[in-house]
Length: 480
Image 1 (tube, rainbow, N blue to C red):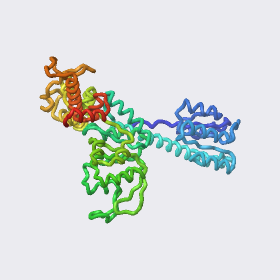
Image 2 (tube, rainbow, N blue to C red):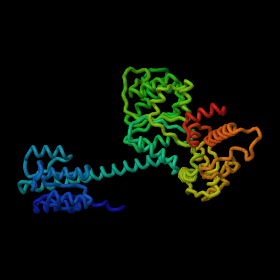
Image 3 (tube, one colour):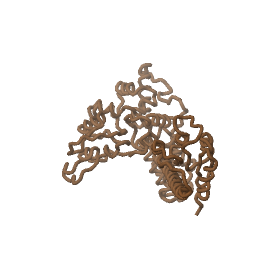
């Protein structure tokens, strides 16, 4: 067992005799640093790692409105608010004692007036310093544990990848995390919407408060209200006790509502009211409850189209869509696929007690050229399967499923190149206008196919507005 590190005590007193006397009491248990003035003390704080400060209350030159001892205390607070300060005084000034108590967690220690009081003073000093040093040690450990927890949370919610599209989303997420604005995360199933929501929470000022997730699609329709808002005892058959809902549990933190497009019309009305007023009642209750939360909603459905079709309330959509973070599908992040594969291989290896494997180039190539309809979730499952069935230190294509091995090789297209969409020879009945129409139709179809049917992603790939894409789809009579 290693020896515990010796803690350091800084003694500040203008009288050399008092400095020596205090040092003699403490030097057997602590490393002692001496200073004769506030200026020297603050300089020592900049250079030394100090655990406890002991300061005389009255010292020259008393340039401020308060005593030099209190000025030392204030200087220490500015340097490190957690550093304990013990103030020693030679008088019985109650006003000064009161000021010390207000500024420090430790009561002032009075200098001995007689030789008989010296022994008591030394015992009191030893006890006070020991308690202060222990408190500083515990506070430092708590801070370190909080930092570790923060890093652990960030690791769990780490948005893995370096593609420009993903980096843009991460930048937006960090910016909006500083506010309490409601966020709507959109994207195909499996693109990592909950991971992004946790990332927003963990880099926000609410990071040390609860993150409560609720998947609307996973709840029976009859239980959604109770799950979100809680219920009182006897509110319905089986409600034997009072239960807090997700909104209460997330107070001061973040509530993540996944698959928000699955809400019934009745629940949409109730959710809208809560978002507007931040107040609600438990099911069967009469007390109005108020919460302070950030709401992050997510969906893989097209809420704009649902609004147009009357399936989703427009006012709720606009209330949720204060900030929209749209996650791109994995197939449009090809550079991130090897990075994610390595990340998931390490994660799976730790889970199953294996050494993290490396990936062969052939293995990576097969992953890159696969379309990934299930996005990141599908990739993680494929990698975990490969780690489990492979006994080698390197993952090769023999550990991949047939659907990936048997995929047709994608034709390489240079960045920015226009795909080949019309015949090399002109048909006899072709006109300029019909050729342009056919080209537009094929281009839109290709963009939709490459985007897995996502109109938002197709519009982004074509560098046109979503509204213009809708118009083209209708004008060109493109199905799907």
